[in-house]
Image (cartoon, rainbow, N blue to C red; front, side, top):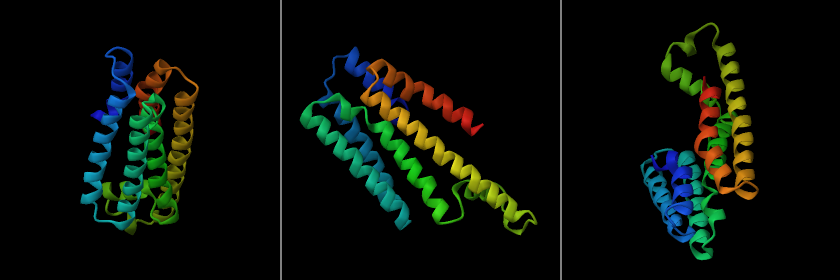
Length: 171
């Protein structure tokens, strides 16, 4: 819930509740701890590596935000999430099957024995590529709102518009 509501909590905390970036960075530490717990539960070396890098990046942002008392680093979390998802989806393009095919295969176990197996696999690969492009664009816009946008624009895009876009794209 904190990950989803993060932009709204940061905006309200900074703008209305008078929380300093130093205090808000503690929420980043809580998120890093949450992701660290997922890291320790992961059985796959590859997944552990990606999650570990993600945790380190969150910790760096939290530490810099805390020491510098700078809101910029607190606002960087959505960019890190997009980078993490991009790496997760993108990795499966080099280590097949693609993420979309893995999800499709979970839903329908007969896909591998289907006569249209290759066509489905290729379609799922294209869907995974489309998601990678989405995460590049979404992450770029998130970064733009961090560096150029106001706190209100950052919160609106990362706390609402990006979720609507994800829902539309998923549909």
